[in-house]
Image 1: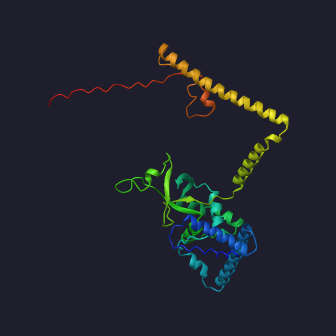
Image 2: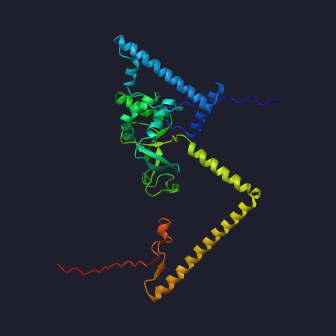
Image 3: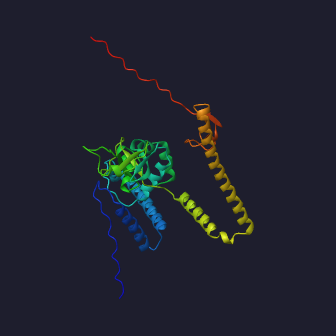
Length: 327
């Protein structure tokens, strides 16, 4: 009996301000792949087609605006852009990708945060708005017509809102581990990293200068692809080790023996410095260390500087409590 065809996935519809789930994000990606398959092209080719359509649509709107301006009527598109648009998340569009790529190339003074146990880059809305108003953005618009035109505050905010609308950057806030009377639910299970914010995604995606957003747009994956190809090549070379020439296998054997010798020398030095400290602690207190920075959190070369040093002793003045005179 032939298997019944699976129904096509339904398009994800989100309410304004609703937080998309990972399943919804994956469904959006699958829908994009299905649309590309229906068009008879790959996903990158389909995205290029969408970019071309967006460029043609923008050019048509500009021509219509020029015609209406010549007739003395205000363009309807400009009137619509003068009003801020609500944020309704959906699949990424070419204009949003262009804005994200531009902001990624700017110095937004990003800081690292922890979101769902993963490290993300976080930036402040104020710095992103400044970058969109900078001369660098106007130069980028001349090279990339997909970047929206910014004429006033409303168009500036609408341009920034392309990021959360396309799920390229979402508003986050710092998690308070002491919410309410007791600890927040699940706060004891969250591993905190010193110096880094632990954040969560907010349902209300707003555009205010004091808010923070976290990047979900990773940009071109060329470096990750090169790392993956290099790792695959190394694994393949190790698997094919029996087929290596005899001289190469002999060289690897000598190299491994040398590495084992260095490791053994390191352990011997660690034991010797401990014995030396134990002897000198009683003979010439407070004791002498060989390579005192060997196990400190310093660089490789700094671990062997200085060659020797005395044990550090902290002197604390004893606290003396004096009786108060009677009044």
